[in-house]
Structures are given as C-alpha cells and as structure tokens.
Amino acid sequence: MTSVRVGGARIRVADVVAVARNGVRVQLDPDVRARIAAARAVVLRLAQGETPIYGVNSALGANTGQLFWTADEGDNWQQAASLFPPINSVSTALL
Image (cartoon, rainbow, N blue to C red; front, side):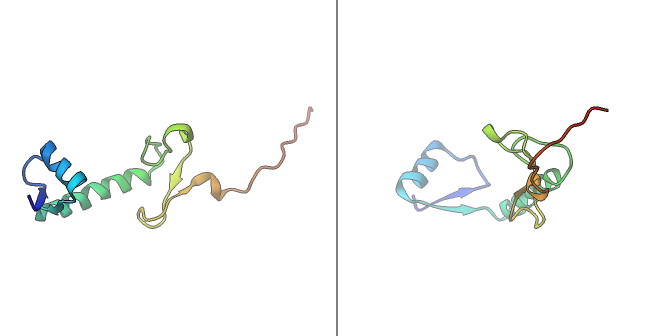
C-alpha cells in the first residue's frame, strides 16, 4: 500500500495502522477540502457567537467556563478575560 485516500470510501482500521505505523501517505479526494472549509466556517461562526459552546469557544476540562475569542478567523485564540484589566482588590461599604 503506497497511500490511503480519504473522502471517497470508508477508511479501514488497516488504513489507519498503515499511516500510523508504516508512514503510508494520506491523499484527500478533491471534494474533501471544500467540505473541510465548509465545516470550518460553521465552527468559526459558532465560536464567534455569544453562546458558550463547550470545546468551541469555551475551554475544555479544568478550564471549563473560560471563554475564548478570535479576531483572525481562528488562526489565533485568546481568553476573553485577558482583555479586561486585572482586579487587584474589591472594596465594600455599608450604607
């Protein structure tokens, strides 16, 4: 086997093993790049929305609840909280 084609037929376990263990090349069917671009556009649209979506614009695991944003269509991401100044102290008063 010299290459594994992705996008046309189902990928077999033997194909994954050939790529992972034997360095077999992966080739994409011509329509796959368009499908990837369409899926990426959906994820970016959702990620830039205000609704937190776990693993898309909200952190995973121990960082759950931290929102992230991107200004360059997903090439770079930052925590939304990093845009605000740090809170060094909190004062309260009774009236």
